[in-house]
Image (cartoon, rainbow, N blue to C red):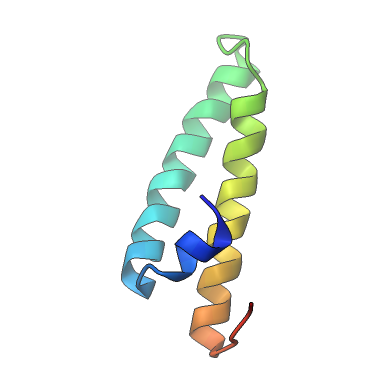
Length: 67
């Protein structure tokens, strides 16, 4: 998701997505470690998406208005 799309969500929705993404990231990490996952890009993109969500969540909680 783009940051502008994430900013349209409420704080509760973002927190729910963050929890879901953390669970998915854990499962992907296990698959990468056990060599069950051939495509490492999905792990990398999931990490970046999680970071985007956390950044927007922090902005909303602190009341920062980013462009």
